[in-house]
Length: 370
Image (cartoon, rainbow, N blue to C red; front, side, top):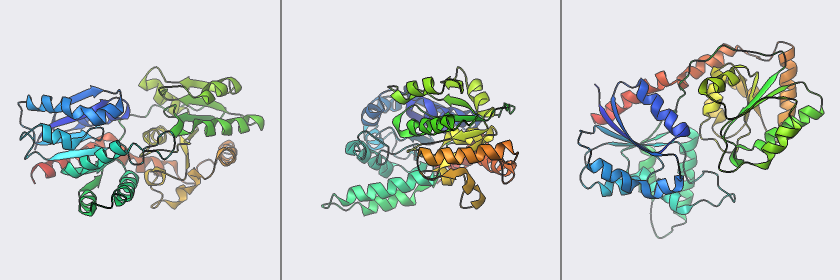
């Protein structure tokens, strides 16, 4: 049964755009999108409901399901649209949550934005999370936050959020290019160039490898943030003899080629609610090297495949460097993979959009029919 889905995306860029575009292109349902550019994300949470409410009031088609993501105040949207959404089921998708999203200085969350996330979750018919890790972080932090508001009892609302939550991974939409290995081991780091991805830890580890005389080539890819961290300019100079690719790639094809030529893909993230780039790297044939934290154990399905513990390191730059040196020795001996690489890649097909879209489409049908 093909449904009429109205989707709202107040931050139509980056991974939010890729997710929605990928899903709609694979979906069996009919979609209309209401969007705003990926700018001023805090304003989107606070104010975008007013913009989208007026558009919904002028929207003449029937809406079987309203789908929106977390950078909006959903309770405001429902109130502002009068009776237009009274009987419409609403799915709220959390790419991130403001209770545990990293901020500067550390541990100083914007309490207003966080509470608007909670009110949106309460107002939704169903809540979808991009990982169990994200949901668990939200539930724990929201409980701790509301417990401090001792005059009020939020337990019924938190229990409601728990009971109407489901996990739907954000998925990747790619056809892996041909693997292109170089004679020298290639190490890749690909993330937003911002503090929560801890690039300084990666560059410190690379400098340790350089000083130890380890032979390697380097791909540093990803989109720059609102300001460029000093560690990037320093590393570009100190590691110039190792650099193969640097910066945001000119096309999606070139980005995927960069992954396909990578022997080792490294994350140093201190914040990650899922890990799209890890999925892309694995599907493109790279060996992931990840910190043992965040959503990574879940994405790597570590509970089901304990042998994948070899992909994880604990600690900082020194521990990462030692882990990489050991893996490079294994690579040179032709023994990088201690279990079949195909096992990992095959298990990651569950993150491909053609698979995820079918699951999400089916759930929308179930929601629409009650």
